[in-house]
Amino acid sequence: MNVQKEGLGERDMAFTPTQRLHLGAEAEVWKGEWFGKPAVRKQRRPRSWRHPNLDHRLGVRRMISEARLLIRTRKAGLSVPSVWDLDYEGGQLIIEHLQGQPLIDVLNDATTTQEKAKATLQRIGHAVRRLHREATTHGDLSSNNILIDGEHVHLIDFGLASIEYDVERFGIDLHVLDEILGASHPQWEGAIDWVIEGYLAAEEELGPAPALQGGSVPSAKEVHTRLEDIRTRVRYHG
Ligand SMILES: Nc1ncnc2c1ncn2[C@@H]1O[C@H](COP(=O)(O)OP(=O)(O)O)[C@@H](O)[C@H]1O
Ligand SMILES: [Mg+2]
Image (cartoon, rainbow, N blue to C red):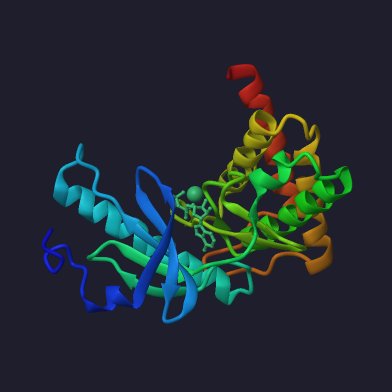
């Protein structure tokens, strides 16, 4: 492989890979070090079934969007990885590696107590509401994309995140998590209710979401009501 042609320039060497974390359809994700600090490299993978130029454009756009929204939400004080480098022509993003156990492991761990599960899911609801207050939906709130580090909740994988103001988009964001909790973690019945408790509590604590440049985001209560609507719709129309 001709490294230069692939767009992997000299600064790629600043990242030393140590362990492959994930090989997905869109990206290959490695843990490693970047200037001596624990880092993660997301390398976009070409998808052969699409036209190479179109594929490249879509991949570049998504990677820039991911970096942009990570920077935006981190600035707003959310616990998301710092962005350290972006080589969008080469299709790679270098971000801070965050400690923690994926939510999926916490919920599947037989030693996890009810109190711990409840407190964790409430904190997740709180974190998701803080994200939504920044007019940002995550787009893929699965139990792999939430890291639990003691009492801290980190949100990762902003590849499908977007800026939104429409209540439906926020409702769908919660519904994705709702479906995953129901399907993959049925032993925690009512898990989504704990998430919603935290989601509503965040608003109580922080006050109404301030209006942003692009408009105002729906309130936590409005999003909750919409989630109930979406659930009813799904139940009756599959
Ligand atoms: N910043 C990070 N800190 C720690 N682990 C991470 C980080 N980013 C990704 N990972 C790990 O790598 C996996 C895949 O990364 P992710 O960004 O979710 O890519 P994909 O879009 O392929 O799902 C995650 O589920 C997580 O286990
Ligand atoms: Mg992911």
